[in-house]
Amino acid sequence: MNKASRLFWPVLVTPKNAVVKQTEQLSRSQKLLTELGLVKSGSNGTYQIMPIAQRSVEKLIGLVDGNMQRAGGQKISLPILTPTGLWKKTGRLEGDISEFYMVRDRSGKQFLMSPTHEEAVTAMVATTAPISYRQLPLRLYQIGPKFRDELKSRFGLMRAKEFLMKDMYTFDVSEETARDTYSRVSAAYDRLFKQLEVPFVKVNAATGMMGGSLSHEYHYVSPVGEDTLMQCSACGFAGNAEVLDSATTECPNCRSSQLSQVRGVEVAHTFLLGEKYSKPLGATYLNTSGKPQSLVMGCYGIGITRVLASALEVLSTDQELRWPKLLAPYDVCLIGPKQGSKEQQPAEAVENELLQHLGQICGAQELLHDDRKELTIGKRLLDAKRLGHPLTIVVGARAVQQEAPKLELHVSGGEKLELDISEALKLVAEHSRQKKSLLAGRVREVEESRISQSIGHQL
Ligand SMILES: [Zn+2]
Image (cartoon, rainbow, N blue to C red):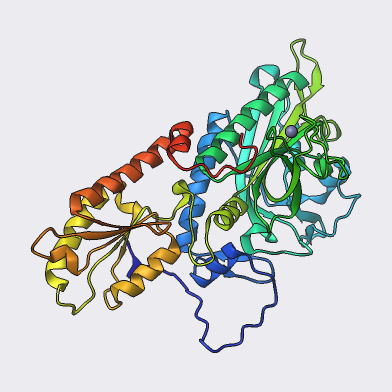
């Protein structure tokens, strides 16, 4: 079980009359994560993730792993350092390279701290030849740090210089089967984003520096987003303004004039790459007649830390974090009586009994016991609300009254209920059931059972 008293949780304390010098624009999620001690700012544009937020990162990784493996993905790890020679072969060092971190080893050989791994993975596959058509399609993915020397790193984990990415690279025998792979991986993305229950927009995208023929982006809609999206309220169409005629006022899909602009945070991207990387790097397979033929590739990214930060950006209030159900660091926070209070002894008996039951219902790992008994219930409840635990249970004076003892149960979002023990446990069990249902991918049921906060084109 997790004890709040033992938790490393470096809350940012600003003296009451301190003049805070605002050097950068802060987003809501960044402000809350920093103030609450979930994330610390490292050197310029990098971030240190503290234990509470790390739990959420791990949950997201688990969720992504599950969906990638359903889509036939196999997990690997590639080195962060990629020889720049490989990038010369694909021509990607010819453009603007100011965002790349480059290092040299002691012999003078130059490497990129990889912002992406197309070259590295393609070269790896090329040296694994001969690959038979029977081994294809091949869908390899990894989750690891990526580096980009952003001119303007902003909004904390939403646009950091070092960030966590899931990147999948796929290899197929033909354009046709690569398109199959594309729809299979896209379906896994759709499923993942539905499981997260944050309204998202999927748009046609420009292929940009990746090259290739088919591309989609997944966005969370937020005023701090860096992309401009065009949305049609008549048919639900959405597109990145980059690929649409910016002067257009007409929906390219239904011709209505109900196009409006919103800001989007790009959280995932899919590309059909074709032979752009396999040709120059010589990644081939042996076809049915034993002849070498270029592999047809796709690549598929999800910004892990960016999904987390921007989901919080969309869901939270200025005062309180709100988490996607499956990413909340803990499901339940339990707050017991204050030390030295009149009700301490009998209330602790209730508290201990509850700890046992809760551990069985939601799992001890999903339970945070706020055992900082030197603090008042009010102070601990304030922390719990700001941290945004889905459920917070308070064992106070009313829990030990003779007639109809009651617990206080706070649902993230402000609802406060007074319940007896069995009712409270029922609610916790219901929360666990909803999570299981989401994990199993029964997203439809959950979607319909809550108030829809749909923004535009939810696929
Ligand atoms: Zn339309």
